[in-house]
Length: 415
Ligand SMILES: *[C@@H]1O[C@H](CO)[C@@H](O)[C@H](O)[C@H]1NC(C)=O
Ligand SMILES: *[C@@H]1O[C@H](CO)[C@@H](O)[C@H](O)[C@H]1NC(C)=O
Image 1 (cartoon, rainbow, N blue to C red):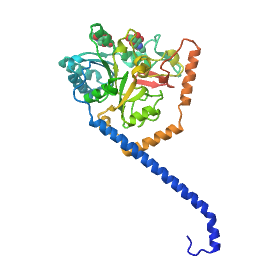
Image 2: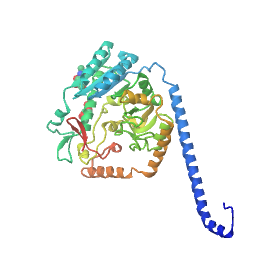
Image 3: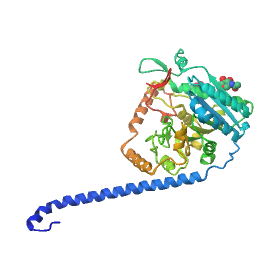
Image 4: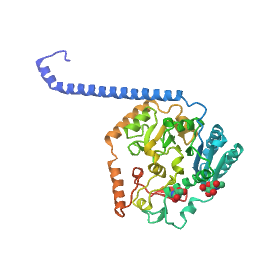
């Protein structure tokens, strides 16, 4: 682009040409990539938005199916949410289903706020409605639990040189207590279709109707998606995608496996190996079989290898219905641990920018990371554990993580 193209000038320009061409190709390449990224993000947003809108448009009809539900719930320091949302939501649910079609089983222990007072209020209101229930308020505190003489089960030698009470068997024991009235009622000939495990979350009656209808009612378990600080989801300890992998990222689109991710994108029931996010519905049968399904922890001998698994993941591993019917996470049922968290994910919860970033972050993470080493560590420890005795087997191996959790006076700790 010289005004005066003398031979002498040209010879000086010529060597620069390849460089300019390279820059040109680079620019074109970059433009193509930017174009692809934009179109791809746009596609994902439009597709996802369309599916969310379609799903919102077909809210479940107002009358629930004639199903009998058994509500099981454990509480510890949950006074605030009980008083602001939970109690009222449970009452609404009981009214909707009819007092005779629900049973409420609550177990609380060791809260130091007035959770017990809030649950007494619920008890009174349920009584007024004529709803059958067992609301057990236990005076036992964490401090008392951990200062007990170590018994045969549920204790572990920790790296800090103490024998400490494992958190998971303790939680399993408490969750099991909420199931005891189910057996008593069965003996009286009173049966339920579904157990609804209700976490300390904000939810509506429509959420429950939608959850029970997950995958047209065919599932071994159906979970909501729970939010503490949206749009990050909350319970990572029990969630495993369709391949049994833990979450790829705590924010949308969460999953490493293609099946789980595609279902989330299309807002269909998401096939997973395990979930326990806020609210879970499960058919009652396995809990009432001759060898009843119950919550449990992994054996202490395995936990000793610095491994742990959520009782809420192991229950899916143990459930004989999991394979036949499938465990699903329902992305249409989004619950929150606060009113603000619930509001932030309704009716929509993702902005176009968020979707664009999420899609790309997920891609990069899938390209650049692997679960190989994590799995290798777990596999090696399980193999060492098995080497000590050949009848050892853990069906919930996909639930295992490199953790040790113990109860402490004011909560629990990783050690
Ligand atoms: C869970 O419940 C069953 C049956 O009630 C019981 O045998 C089992 O020991 C319990 N597990 C734990 C960890 O408490
Ligand atoms: C209520 O549940 C607790 C805990 O499982 C149990 O010990 C108690 O016997 C139950 N009470 C009634 C009246 O069924």
